[in-house]
Length: 497
View 1 (cartoon, rainbow, N blue to C red):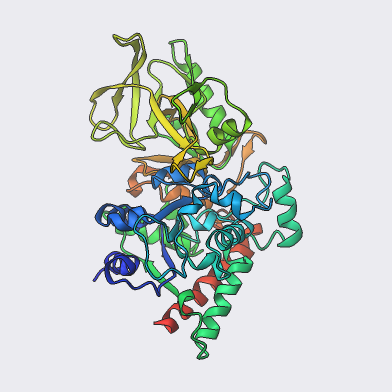
View 2 (view 1 turned 45 degrees about the vertical axis):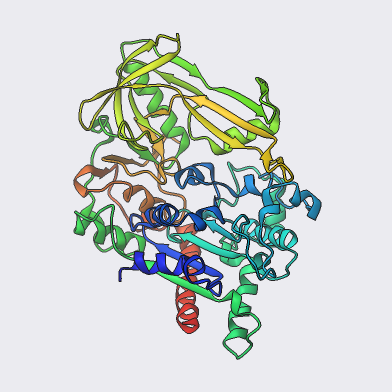
């Protein structure tokens, strides 16, 4: 049985066999090993699991990739202050009233009993603690996460939690630094994870009251994204494991000779500068399409102006551009899926900008992979705002964001490319702000960038790689923490059987 099938069987043990003893499940695997595929398949095959689970992620992009929602959205948390106390009444006014109380012997199929968190490597310790705290209140249970089943999915060797966002300290950041410390950002440095480990240790000392907190760990190893390029996968895995013995495997190119393929950069300003330069080179005058943002109230009324809460929601959870500047012959990438027409990551060239019969803007894009021209209409993103009517079981407000599902594809940051599979890429080290060649600055950043493509022939780098590109000096401690965590997690899971 493959690891994918083992993971399916484990996750669905509750739905299929009524076995709720596996309460803490961690599905771990390198880029391209089928983590997202696994989740999609389980949701498709078992509607009970689909209906009884919340599918969450730490960022809007990550949430979108799994057809889920952000952690902050479900728990009505403001990123600037996640530490604000919430009462049981406040939580019951949210969708959290739908949680099954773990003490109930008869489990209603209409209630939720599972939280799935994808991209767990990016979840900070204080946020992980907050999730558990709120679940305890909502469920009336003092066990970690109120006794709910928790399924964690991700790769701890990919992008880590953000400790300080854009160099500024929010109230949440200050409280985090005071109570946890900068070196304790990973979720496994949280207090609730320490409690879970303590429960597991007690359990293996003959203490049986905490069987519900057993940790089960599965490592996915089969490669899907780079399955047709074994050498590429092996070299990617070497970088993931900080093995720098074969860095010259990745071919070096001059950035000025790679304008025909997407640039992946570590710096937001570099991506912006590259896109602006390439757009100005086109002979056609760029047009700007401004996103339409509205709030729909449950009675059907539409508000054209939205408050700060709605603005933050759009900013955090929508990958599309608020002001999309585009021109004929511009290179673009789709950021949504639309059946066989286009998928997230599909590249194309803008061939025309017109109006349809309803006088609505449309864009004609020629796909690069097959030359087919398709009509692109504006896409509508919807997000429930956390004001839930627990009696009527409806959301009081719904945020609506309308924009073309396109972004300029000359350059994007590694963080924005996360979750995408690209046909080709150039890894750009240029630091536009400092006007010099830079380096990755975060743990796992280079690995994430290189692993976006399927084939080694379609990727190149802007400089000769060295050990500090693979693991920046300031990230050595992060690597050691993750190594020790995974080692201990495997031991604990094996001991639990």
